[in-house]
Length: 536
Image (cartoon, rainbow, N blue to C red; front, side, top):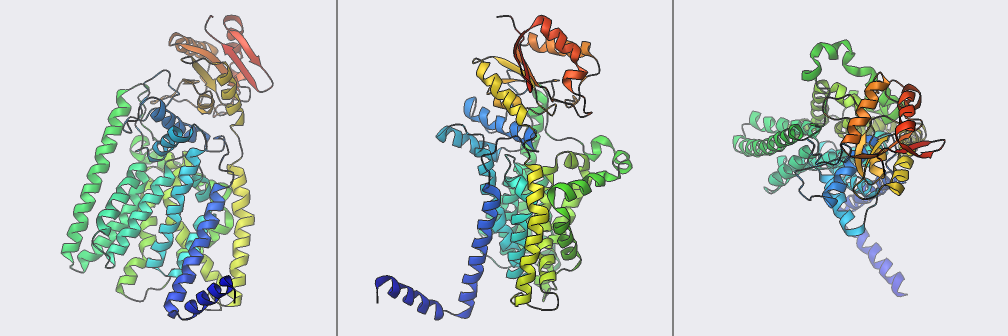
């Protein structure tokens, strides 16, 4: 017997001699590993795509903060963008976990615009693993496999997890925190509580919607109170208050920072206390937008059907403890719905904020898939269930994942990147640019110019920056004000249009005439128009 054959025989014998429960655990671990590989393939595919997809403007703002950490200041409490002039351009933003890690990578390996995508995708692996273990704890291993696979393939989750956004770190950290707490709740070791608190706190700092996941921790604490386990509940209450104090302190600072520096911008808008309840009510809480995003971007009909089935047909718990855990997905979903009601306009305008929903939706989706796969068979191990599972996965991939991801990753801001690169070839260190991307207000052209400058019309604060002003005289006055502040170049993509679909080159043809008379035209191609607006 050769050495390799002998080793294989020994391994087979050892495996055969294992306790059945150990063998089952090995099988479950291998399935989890396979799901993690599937999730990684979905998220790391085309990871080097420039920041020109459907989320371009938010991604490039995040990327600018990474640039400024590395180039101007490593102080994580002073996030700064580059689209409001020479600066400082500090803004009230989330705790910058993804952008700060990307900045560290820039420092070590040089600048690559896709590093932020990579960091986000790595965080998503934590989400897949934590979701799997949380579902196994709440329901069982079969549901854990189905839920994790559903999350791995849902178009919305894949899109957000492979974008340079703070949301992947938020969901990863709060899901990890909730899972660690659930382990503590069922009798885990004491260190799990501070670990869960730290992870959840960081996640909520990374993005405020993460607070919704805290409802699960609060719910399980209440369960302890009802069981008269007051000492354990008191420990959780103290940990929760510490967490909330840290979160409140940071966002209090962020609001102060955003209100203290031009352009006086605090991220986020469109809350019910800003717009008023009746505004939300008259717009049916923007549910039409939710439906359109769900059908055409984030889920598609196959995933939506599975989610609906899983929601209406939950697993049946065996005991009191399991009954409490079985409700975790519903508690999380209900809390996320409360967040939606409070911030419906903000969430529908910026759909990456839906990410907090993806953990409970993946759990329901996995449950729905198992219900259909085992219908009439009663077991997930039957050949019929296996065939149905493959059919469900195939339909979800072909009707949802592939086509919807293609839509969202379509490089709609490509000409904005081209404009930025054209400016980068011209601009000298210290010079400032004014740039209009294909979607007005998107800072993608400023980002790829590798300079500082302004979007046009200039935005920030309460200014509407995705819509052109009504007349050329006002626009020229805005341009002259930027020139007085040091702007050196003006560039626009010829397809640039505002949120009313008005092309800049048509709506503001008088501005172009003015530039032809007062500036030096450097580029006039079928896609771009660039002027030097300061005298040499």
